[in-house]
Image (cartoon, rainbow over all chains, first blue to last red; front, top):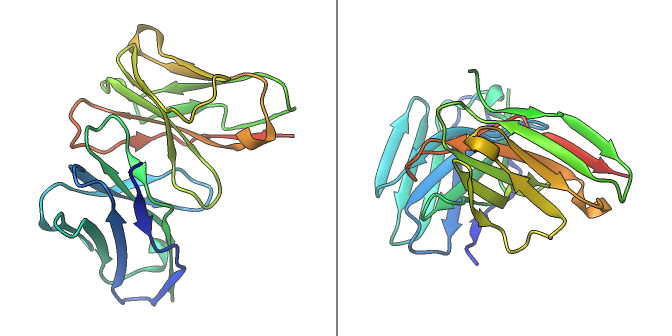
Length: 110
Length: 114
């Protein structure tokens, strides 16, 4: 059974701060890694993907991957109240199914 | 084509009734997925189609659940003899071929079994 672990939170940060979200996974053959944002009552929205060790930046978001430690993280710089949501980590090996964590709830305090 | 479309958005049904949900994927996406999400949990895989072929189905999926994707276009998910434990958000997603891309999810169908 492939497992994806996330701290459920809630994580609270002040507006303008950096929010750091973490995820660990159990299956070493996992190839692709994703972060989804989910607002309450809405469906998940893809915000970042990462496939190679290291950092990948997209605007205020940076994804970090360390396959040796089986760890992937998401940094949100200059956090805004609109970033308040649940962040889901997902991993896959073949792409035929994704394995999701339970999500981390983030609240950005104005 | 503005995204993945799911219908209905909400469904309330009595225990024991059958329900059917529809998903229209992004037209150029040949992969289609169904997931189920309950409160406080991440989405849980149900099944996967590539074109019209159902290539994977969760071992956790009861035989009361069936999915089809005729002609490789829209898909339906049917739940027979619904139970209260089936209450959840049912999410459809699609993607083009290539495991390196993420899914685009539809808005979901929220099922409540009373």
